[in-house]
Image (cartoon, rainbow, N blue to C red; front, side, top):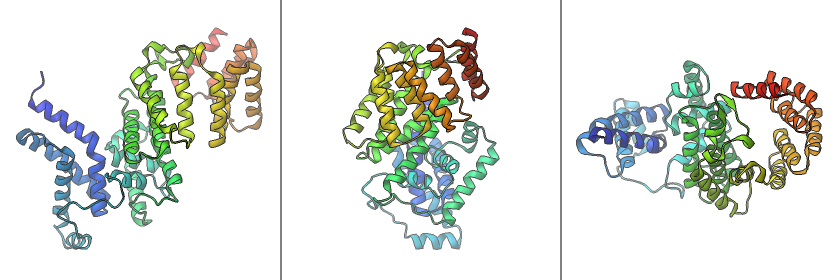
Length: 404
């Protein structure tokens, strides 16, 4: 049985997940000081743990936390002459003001600032997870297998860069929005893939990436690509539990589809349909459409491989990449026969564009195996085994070699 303290703790935890980014974003917008904003936001959440058990959880926890953090920031600034002068210069109001943009959430400005192209890509990822998701420096370092002091320095340098380069705290103007939005989506997808590929037992990174994608969809409802990215994440997450078995990678065709999360699949397909209704297809929408072909097929034999091959061709047009070409080769092999797919794989190998990429020999090995060319498949599996980056993949490849 849960008591009042447990309910308050649960409410505070939920508020932390839902409101941290908004509180920090509001304080950065008010003071321009990133460290002060994070410190005062943390103070506000700490105050909630002592105040809410006594007074009850407020009707609007986010508004309570924002006010508490704002008051804390004002108190901190008033302690010295420079801070007091800053308050006067900023003309901090005692009442709410209408937003500068037609968006009722400060987080959008924070997202675009964290993902500004002037910042190194690793810094964008770390800053997004710290300021928007509220992950601690230690949690971020652990997720990316980096020492905590090194991650702390990365965050310090990113904040210093924002100050020194005068990176504006704003949503970019219309003419810059497409390229800047692509940078934001790339950060969120990298966060998701980091958690997905590393088999994070707590699912912290994938959960945060999906949550931030939901936030972006709410803040930019007219933009189809954030919704496409959300759909892609949901469709991948739906089959996460079946990707490995006993520490060994399980290929898509051999996964237990009865264990796939049908609610996530339904939500992902619905999000994709809404994105495609805008008739402005982008790379994430096309990738989500490919994922939907797999997720909605009742069994592996029912997979619409001709449609997947068409979608990969479209993805290659929108976002050219040798990895996309490799995936298209697999789809062509499944749709038109192994020799057709192998010819495309051999073209990619001859080009040298994927030299050192483990999935190139792994894909070639699988197609050779399907074509009955065991000796060649064995050599390709051995090459892939040397390059495979994860233990689950190495175990899978070793198993294939034993079968041959």
